[in-house]
Length: 173
Image: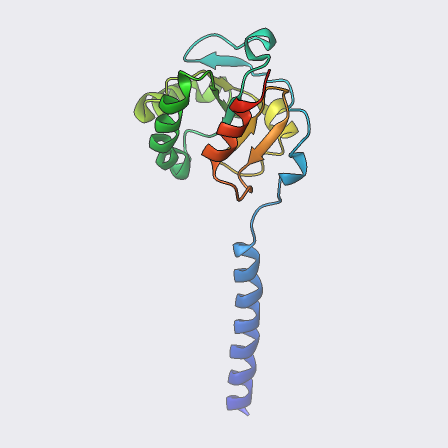
């Protein structure tokens, strides 16, 4: 009897582990339903690395939006690749904008994150409204917005980011 009970417990434990493990491996809710839709206005409580970009500054531009947090290890790890991408596309008019939901209470930590990662583009803090509209369920997360202010790429897209940037840049404003 004890052997049957042990087998049953191991079996139930394995099944429960499988259910939990499978849930953990499922990707976050897809934001791909935003592809082709208009990007929301970019709003934040305040800005680091420069003034807030105005709607006029962004009109007709290709944008890369980056959602991050100061405590996010993967955000820190992604910074060198983002910097390289920004350096490559800056002269072609692509505008990078960082967004975090962290507010004024985390300002020192946010500044240290930006300094440590050597990010040079504007970063909006307290950007909860914009991040909610973008359905930013996880970080880091990126979106590309084309010249017509449509979201054309997100973190779930399978197409390489540089191919989408090239296509977006080729469109007339």
